Image (cartoon, rainbow, N blue to C red; front, side, top):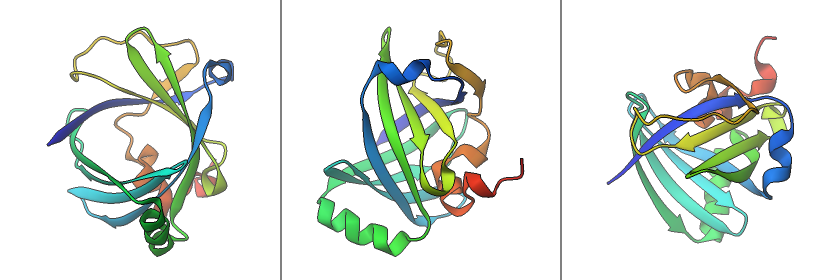
Length: 155
């Protein structure tokens, strides 16, 4: 069983853009409840099926399996129009890997950074391009964004 411990932040400015190349991601949700979501994702020319449990104290169960890209593309068609499109940039800073997601499509304009930790209490030094923390705001979960795109949020 996998465990994901993650903090999520809004991103400010463009200083992060020069720190690494991006890879296009398309993901959709095949099932979801208050307890778990089932996601299919293509990341360039690889694909994954992922089951994520409910978040409690920044922690949740995560089960991820590589699947054939052709299967993932077929599954994504089951999710349309509720898919999330984004480009992910992996930025190593000190001993942590930051992932910056620049959203496209109906979520264009949203940029979020995530970092996985060893424990919920792990101390964290924030890069200067990190804005407010949104770890506890479920509106920034990709499963929420698939059903409630950022472009439809009130200003």
